[in-house]
Length: 93
Image 1: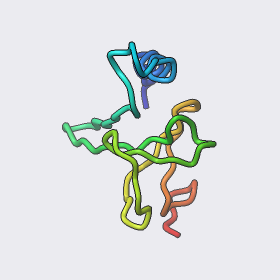
Image 2: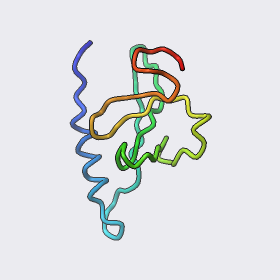
Image 3: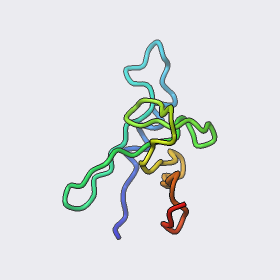
């Protein structure tokens, strides 16, 4: 598996965190889409502004009912992904 350069995401993440509501041209939670081999794509949820906040966003909108979330969730600081219904070794809970 090759190395994935996440520097562009990290730059946007930092810009969003530093955005001033009154003067910034961007804002809100980032919208992340993972594109895999053969152009398979899927939205990736994100903890925003950090995993510690416990707030999850999908497509820029807050997730209000975690029972229906079946997407991977990315930590914006470590860039690691987790899933609410799977353990670390891919076993369904």
